[in-house]
Amino acid sequence: MFLRRIIVGQLQANCYIVADEKGKGFIIDPGGDGEVIVDVVKKNNLDILYIIATHAHIDHIADLEKVRNFTDARFLLHPLDVPFLEDPDLNLSNLMYDPRVFPHPDRLLKNKEKIMVGSIEFEVIHTPGHTPGSVCIRVNKYIFTGDTLFCTGIGRVDLPGGNFQTLQNSIRDKIFSLPEDTEIFPGHGPESTVEKEKRENPFV
Image 1 (cartoon, rainbow, N blue to C red):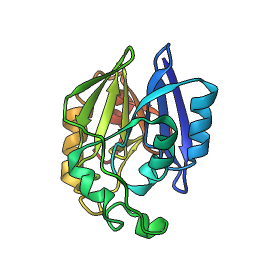
Image 2 (cartoon, one colour):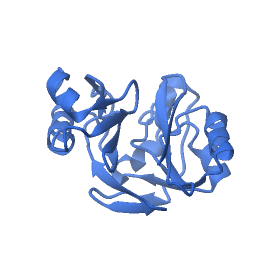
Image 3 (cartoon, rainbow, N blue to C red):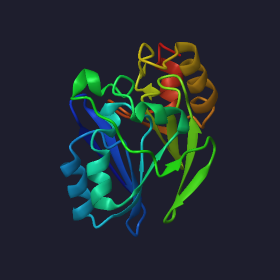
Image 4 (spheres, rainbow, N blue to C red):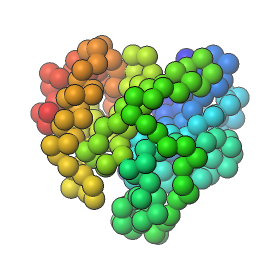
């Protein structure tokens, strides 16, 4: 499996490019530096079918349209974060950039649904708390957690739609219930494992 992390944008978000052995793949959180993301797609001759936003904050979707225009991929988002796309106060572009609005998703994600991309199957796990529509994406022993869970940290809960108890419940019930050797690829910072976070994360 092809897996590449690219650190993008002003807030150093992690964008992930995932593809199977034949190059069919998807991109998670194109939050900036779209030209770098596109360059990786070009150089590796990848056929990107989906662009997934773990949530609709600007640092995870800033270059959504640039990447989608090149790849012609379908944009996927949980329905509870759709209002963020149309509101610069909710998507936080008012804080970091000029106010921006984003297009409606091509497909709305559902909790526990599984989607095939070439030979890769990914599962959607709805993990509200950072935003109402935050999701994690699970692929085999990997989970891409967005801003739900970091290495010894969690996403902010003081932004619109955030809730600390809800976030804790999402992590405990939906991430910590996974096998302990599950590798965590967060929206910011270094990788971790479920075992490490259960043992060391002070917020959960």
